[in-house]
Image 1 (cartoon, helix red, strand yellow):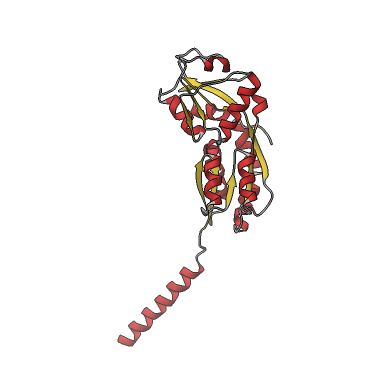
Image 2 (cartoon, helix red, strand yellow; image 1 turned 120 degrees about the horizontal axis):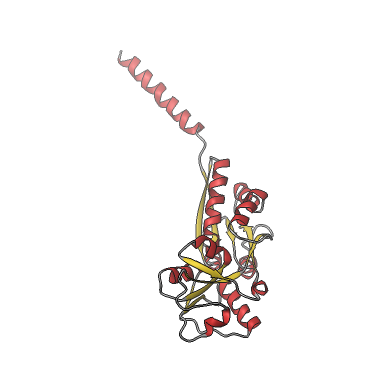
Length: 247
């Protein structure tokens, strides 16, 4: 009986080992994406995972300049989606892209104010009023670059009370009542909903923001599939619903 019990146990161990080895292992794809892509990429990642049950998409959002710096300094990532071609080029110049970037969406800046618009903002020129607390993105961030282009186009110079590292931070200052107005993207206004209202900027098309995505050096075929998915028709519908323009 003792030998029989040992035999049964040995068979159970062998069977268990075989089952574990036959179980597909989940593959993780790490994606660095601009903060303005938070909602859309979260949905797209969910959709991609639904189509690829053995894949997990790990998303990291921040300002494009911060993400590019992290990648150049060695942060592990498979895919980079930037809100700025210049930041993508910085990564490419460092020899860290495995393929040419693909443009997948566009965006334009807009003014965002609290729903009650306490400062009575109606135009970009109103933001130059010293009594208006305006928040913008830092100059090295894509939304900051866009804001500076609008200053040049309109001839209006702003004196912001703070310069933030991402549009998410700008939006947060406005929704929390710490600022009368901010410069974000039209898509950020849309996703913020009823706590804010957006005001179009005359000449905003001059500051059109282009979004490129690229496979990073050392990434595998699954990461390339995600890049292709983002550039495909199914993801395009998600971007359009969020207010992004076509590439």
